[in-house]
Amino acid sequence: MNERHAVEATIKAWSSAITAKDAANVVSNLTDDVVQFTLAPPLQHKGKDAEDLAGWFATWEGPIGGEARDTRIEVGGDVAFATSLVRMTGTKTDGQNVDLWFRQTLGLVKQEGTWRIAHVHSSVPFYMDGSMKGAFDLKP
Image (cartoon, rainbow, N blue to C red; front, top):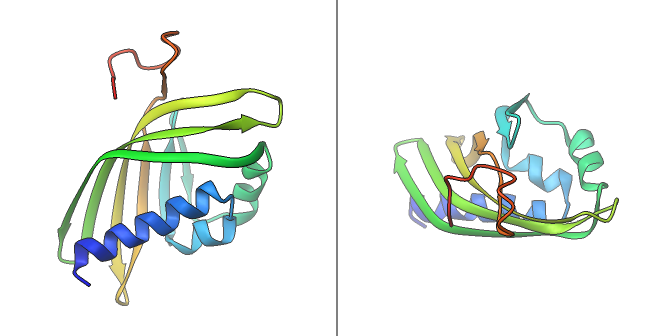
């Protein structure tokens, strides 16, 4: 398997774990010192915390829908970057229907022969209902 395919496999495993709400498998694809900037306002999280993630998953009814478009991956040595336009859908436990898009950038490193996600940056979400709730300059 070439390095680009290995990076794709790591991203797919991480994304699938998120949609399945499987906190243990989400964090297994992350480095121990991962840094994440998530949506708006930009909230920074450092390190892996499966318990906190499981708590967030509990705020969703059923599965979390996930779709990535316009994915671009660049690999150089033991470092890789991936960008994509991501759609998240689902229903929160409070009944809110979620259907938002955001740009996501991932930084990956190869550690002991295995690719892991070391950096996650998710942009301000924007909505497809025309409400302009988020960044209005972005379009899928």
